[in-house]
Image (cartoon, rainbow, N blue to C red):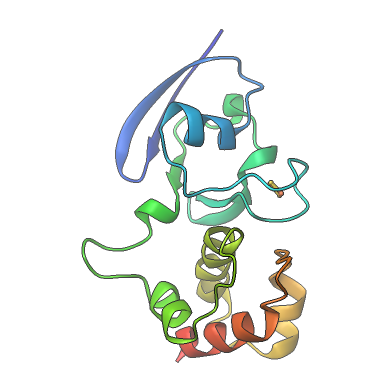
Length: 150
Ligand code: FES
């Protein structure tokens, strides 16, 4: 049994359980935050992307035992009160989503990326935003990233 104290979307939270449990499971089943999605479960697709201390991370591959004191932000906590994050606004303006399944992970990855690349080139985007989208919305994803960066 592992005990971990962490913060999720600004709320203190205590986890008691198997330290090998992936953060994704705790978010969805423990905290009831279903916006973060399961895709591959092996850190390859990015559907489960959240922020850990402000950095994008694939939550299916992060054991709870590593998260003592961590500050987690999920898609549910990205907006500031009633105001959507600039990336969320750009996603809506560019009508990015098709089926929508991967989009929470895409948005979280991009929100972290833009902090390091405030004026990203196509190459920056290609090298850093590696989340997969089975609908192939990549052209709209790139347009939304450029819009959010303005
Ligand atoms: Fe985590 Fe695919 S579900 S990277």
